[in-house]
Structures are given as structure tokens and as C-alpha cells.
Amino acid sequence: MAADFKALKQDLTRRMDGAMETLKKEFAGLRTGRASPALLEPIRVEAYGSVTPLNQVANISVAGPGLLSVQVWDKGLAKAVESAIREANLGLNPQAEGQVIRVPLPPLTQERRNELAKAAARYAESTRVSIRGVRRDGMEQVKGWDKKHEISEDEAKQAEVEIQKLTDQYVKQVDSVLADKEKDIRTV
Image 1 (cartoon, helix red, strand yellow):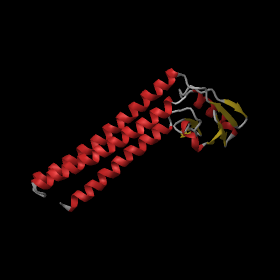
Image 2: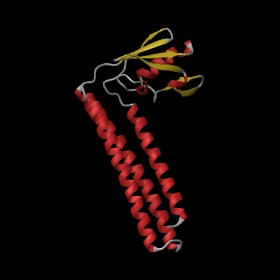
Image 3: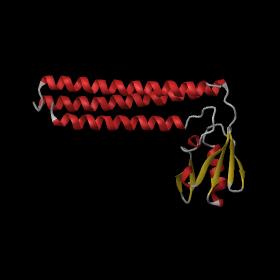
Image 4: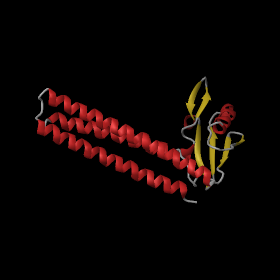
């Protein structure tokens, strides 16, 4: 098979890995029954005239099974951080104590668990779409080589089969990660 295919396959694998990493980060932001600093990582704060990720203006740590602690580095940003957490639509009610903001995590209701499971399914589907887009790009590349007669028809068919196998492997990974996350969300 053409040496180009090896490079193409590496590129497709790298892009599909990127989609999986994005999915894992999105899942980390979905709340389960346990406190996790990843829950607050997507939050952005208005600081120093620009919008900054929360973890760049404060230290986020677990203070207990149902409590997060946010240590703001600049005392002047405490109010902005507190309101950013409250307005993040995560159902959290932060309480400021000077530069430390305590974020108690209320127990999840069944309705909220169902909403989180649906959100996880949406993230997973968007990742599957990304992976299929990467597959499409790879297939188009192989068809282009075939049209230009840079590879034989048999090599083109073999390349398409390998790209499909790679795609199926990543879609299975997405399904597996989603099943684990849904189980985690639904565990009381």
C-alpha cells in the first residue's frame, strides 16, 4: 500500500484521539454524585478586562464529599468568581468567605440525573459525528489517490476497509465511555 496511507492513517488516528479527549473533558464537567474540581473548570470569569478560565484565577479543590473549595488568588475577584459560579447554570449556590468560596453540591434529583444523562448522550453523539467526519476526510483522500491512479483499486478498497475499521473502533470507545458515564450519573 502507498506510503501516503500510513501517514493518512496516523493523521486520522490523531484526529479521532482528539475527539475522544474532548469528549472526556466534557464528561468531566458533568456532575455525578461526587465532588470533582472538573465540574467548575468550564466556568469563565470576567477578570482584568477579559474573560478568563476559573482555574487561572483560583485554585479549585475538593473540601469534602459534597463540597468544593475555590481559593481565589486576588481578593478583588472573589465577587466575580462567586457570581460566575452561580450564573454557570450548574444548580450551585456558592458561599463566599473572604478569598475562599465554598460550593456545596446539592444531592442530585432523579430529574437532574436524567438531564445529565441526556447531556452526556448529546456530547457522545457530537463526538461520533466528529469521528465520522474524520472518516469522510480519509475516504475522500483515498478516492483522490485512486482517481489520480496513485494507488490501485485494490489498495483503495483495502484502505477504505481499514479506515472503516478504525472508525468502528473509535465509535465503540465512545459508546463504552458513554455507558460508564451514564452508570456513574445514575448511581445514587
